[in-house]
Image (tube, rainbow, N blue to C red):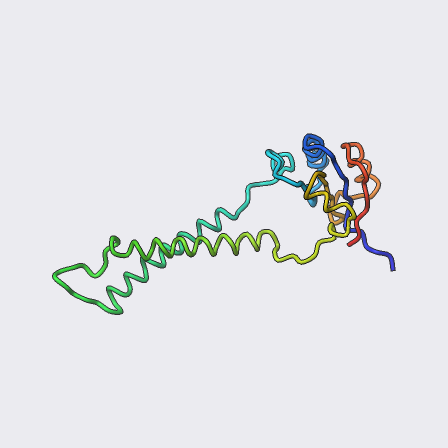
Length: 177
């Protein structure tokens, strides 16, 4: 039984080379591809055409939920669950509810950020076809890689290979799924 193709991988030696190759792949209209780098490359997200992550919005939603939960919990406790009338004190005051709301804001923000990051990134992913590539460990040291997936609508084995070679990629290989 023949192995199914996951995509193509090409190696690049220098940061500017992979940066300009990413621009060429983006301009060619590919949507399902990635760049593997040993360190963060400033501006690579823009070169790849990536949009801003939604994780900060998820974090904000978690923080607002935590704050509102804290305020609501103190209001419910003071006004309905255990009303205590002492010296004309109001049943609810945001000043007294703030410490609890502050702590719940931090707690809910942390949980929302971690859970949101896991969901958006598709984690946990215990295996990826790129790990079959012989030289992938160099992607953590001194080599850059571009991987174009076969599920991309524009993927054509010959044309995609020609694009990666024209962009300066060396050792362009096919990855098995």
